[in-house]
Amino acid sequence: MSIMPTRPRRATLAGNRVYLRPPKRVDQQHFIASARASRTLHGSWVRAPETPAAYAAYVARYRPANASPIHVGFLVMRNEDDALAGVFNFSEIVRGVFRSAYVGYYGFAPLVGAGYMTEGFALALDIAFRQLRLHRIEANVQPGNARSLALLERIGFTREGYSRRYVKIAGRWRDHVRYAMLAEDWKIERPRVRRAIGSGR
Ligand SMILES: CC(C)(COP(=O)(O)OP(=O)(O)OC[C@H]1O[C@@H](n2cnc3c(N)ncnc32)[C@H](O)[C@@H]1OP(=O)(O)O)[C@@H](O)C(=O)NCCC(=O)NCCS
Image (tube, rainbow, N blue to C red; front, side, top):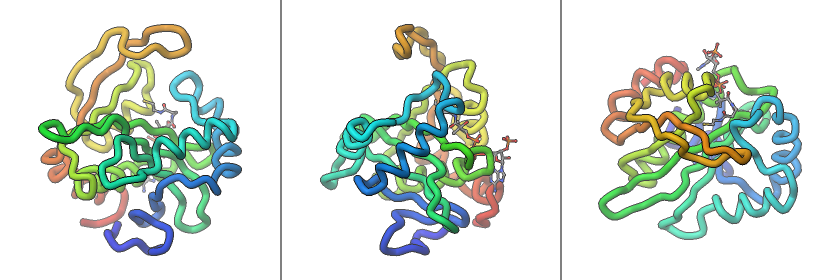
């Protein structure tokens, strides 16, 4: 991982195998095809934009238009071929005495399961804490979502609580496990995560 992107005209932040950049309107076709190919993977956990209108709404919401955005989204792109590996979205950014946000994410088939989301998460946290200057990132996951819980544990999030009937998904209020990463946690976890993904210090 390096702060200087290997693809200066395109990357927001680049790692060994993937880079992050904001979603753009021109990604529409690639994104929708990836979302449709990932329906089984996403199951009832997440719903990625699958229509041009939904994708346009996503870009409008998550592509920062000013220096203090409320929502910021990133596509995880594979370095070698610009294949779309996944998405990280920071939502409801609150500044002032909070400096907090929620993170949401999903990978795309067939690239998921090869470590790209783990590396992408490390890059996303570097952006959250170093560029956006946030202090707390929260992630809420349904108790049965083993892959997502494993990803949070792998990255070093701390389990803080359990929120009953937290989000209404597909017509039902679903319990969620609440995890958080603080800026000071990431300083400790970052070297371990970088070693695990083969990015050295
Ligand atoms: C949640 C989700 C993003 C997790 O993705 P993932 O596949 O676990 O993450 P990665 O792509 O980083 O792959 C990790 C795997 O690659 C392996 N790996 C290989 N090379 C690696 C490397 N260099 N670095 C890190 N991991 C590597 C890891 O050991 C891990 O293996 P395992 O699957 O045997 O445990 C994915 O399952 C998903 O999109 N789920 C549906 C949407 C969803 O639930 N979103 C979250 C809602 S809260």
